Length: 80
Image (cartoon, rainbow, N blue to C red; front, side):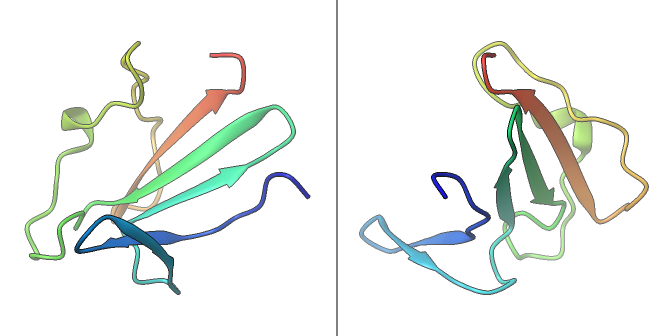
């Protein structure tokens, strides 16, 4: 119960607010890893970000190959 899928969107002023599928970033906490899914329309402008332009964390975790062309997915072990 400590980890669960929750989508958050920051409103002006920095207040995180849960929303439905409107958030461009979703994080799923599994037993041994995190799965981060990022919409390629990250800013909601219709201009898609390139997967190679995104990294996760200071060590530069690269995105994994995704069959869905509209999202970029990262897998990170909890100890990384």
